[in-house]
Length: 77
Image 1 (cartoon, rainbow, N blue to C red):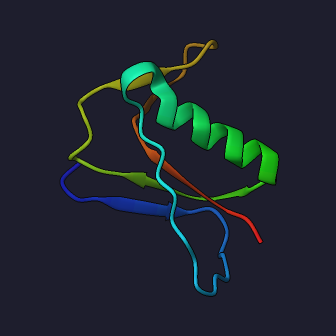
Image 2: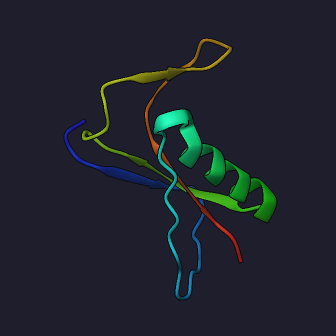
């Protein structure tokens, strides 16, 4: 992958949006807090971001499928 790529799953009509980022760090606190917000607000996933600037790792799920690391975007109204 040579360029950052955003894959839109649905078209989100956003007015004055606020972005909250949750990044995995020490103890995964940012990721856990963001996951909690998504669940509590029942936010809808609308896009994925793939970037060559992410670490060169892959995610393997329980079924053995492999995918690149990605950022996930949600919205809530």
